[in-house]
Image (tube, rainbow, N blue to C red; front, side):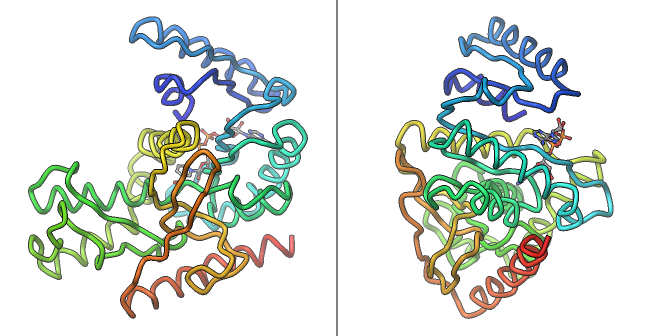
Amino acid sequence: MARATCAAGELGDVWLYDIPQKENFAKGKALDLEQNGSVIGYDAHIRGTASWADLEGADVIVVTAGIPRKPGQSRDDLVATNLPIIRDVANNAKKYCPNAFTIVISNPLDAMVYEFKRVTGCAKEKVVGMAGVLDSARFQLFLAREAGVSVKDVRAMVLGGHGDDMVPILSACTINAVPIQNFLAKDKLSAIIERTRKGGGEIVNLMGTSAYYAPASSAVAMAKAYLGDQKRLLACAAYLDGEYGYKDLFIGVPCVIGGKGIEKVVELPLTDEEKAMLKKSAASVQSVVDVVKKS
Ligand SMILES: NC(=O)c1ccc[n+]([C@@H]2O[C@H](COP(=O)([O-])OP(=O)(O)OC[C@H]3O[C@@H](n4cnc5c(N)ncnc54)[C@H](O)[C@@H]3O)[C@@H](O)[C@H]2O)c1
């Protein structure tokens, strides 16, 4: 789905890479997407391939390689299967697209983006994980529906790891500058936080696999911010080097994305309760990273 959204956004030419066993599927999908452009009016060239050489010099890589979870699984259950896949992708990315801005989507997200950076040795500004834009979008939608306002006016962010202990930030949540507490009582907010944390699982339980549309749009918003030097402030899994008190870890934090990649990690003042939740979430991410480091 990320490829369809990239194509429709006319971000440039799009290559759909998949493993040799899926090459024809990738080529067929590319053709279908180009024909879709002829109907709805976009001119991006889209091709499928199983050869990394075709991706040489890419400006942006969106990494969705790896299996999604099934009902009953946590994201962390995917680590054994997806770790060799992310290593394969990272080794090829290092060889063929060393200057690309890379957006990792594969789960378990924060550990996979950590491993991508470790294997490629790329600069911390040039690799980021997509989770916060999606989790924040889910949070914003639930808040908008419950408060009876347009989703366009909800400002809310979800920080921390992309797991069930992610941290929806209520202290900075407003409906166009009006604090969310003016609209919703504590019990409603707690229920929304809980639904947000399980937002991915809710879809997996319904569809038997991961979400498509909102994750794709989230990754494309990040790619557009980079390609268009838009200086967007988005919640993303960024490499921390002391910010928020964490080092050598990717977790979701507010970042400015522009033409240089992750141009700034913004340190948002958090309440003591939010700091404690972030600590718990970071510890969960660290435990998966520790498994990755030993494997
Ligand atoms: N970060 C998020 O918010 C978020 C949201 C949705 C999905 N996801 C994750 O994204 C990943 C992909 O999900 P999906 O629904 O697109 O799965 P999918 O099964 O539809 O697609 C995954 C693709 O990866 C390919 N692949 C396998 N090994 C590869 C390799 N070495 N190199 C390149 N490609 C390879 C497979 O052939 C397959 O086509 C999963 O890990 C899922 O959990 C993350």
